[in-house]
View 1 (cartoon, rainbow, N blue to C red):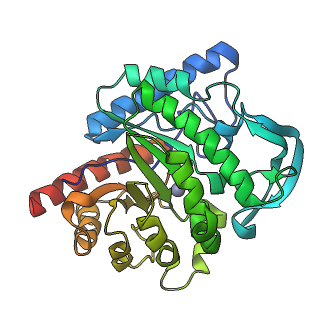
View 2 (spheres, rainbow, N blue to C red):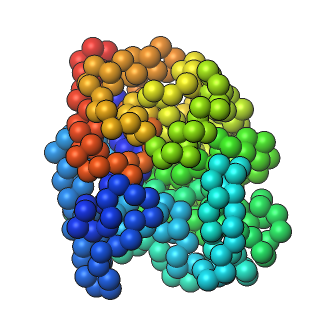
Length: 339
Ligand code: ZN
């Protein structure tokens, strides 16, 4: 009961990349960089295990960003042709690479790092991949014409990758879809179809992470415009409940999401965000247990997995470490109370 996991990224150690920034530049190159990334992954595996987190991960130490890390090796993308794009419905403007031809995965993307991570832990291991819709909202399209078409092409590629990672021994494949909270009509029209395509044939656990973004300024400002109740989930959970995905990760800690919306996912396991990633304040176990108790009013305990709201990449390492402890200790407290 109340098995813990994290949503995604963890900070890169200061010796690996510039701390407390997204898109941080690496401090090594070539083989030295490969070794340094492995060292960082080992460090976080150990930290997660020591804290008592049940389902662990590499904390995305091998990639510069959760979307572009996957895209770097695909064919069909011109990285020199940058297009200015207002991503997440113009929440922030970024220069993004451009899709100029059919997308193809000519070789495995994450196999090496997953083999490495798998060899160094016996605990259940999660791996995160960007979801098709979120990728479409993070690169420019000058080939497919319709987002839905590009998403389906990406879903097939993601599926090939996910099947390989499952074969290496990944226990949970999670697709990150923060764009689901922005383009709710598209989610219902084609987003969930693309997600199902990405997860087709997988026998490991499958998950989708839908958050309100990293704790960066643009997201904090955006959240202020969403009003007293954030009801985006209400528009997508019914169709998501009919999807093939088994676990849904949602933002709950310090958010304005009404917890009652969890009743719209009666057939899913819920990764309940009990750790706020937009604050340096480290939660007390009591606070974490309170969010779990609130979720438990709407969802059976067996279906609740306490988790972080989102990735912790932009946080200071010491803060992330403290929050991991809070997650594990809060879940332990909740287990004692509800067990
Ligand atoms: Zn997130």
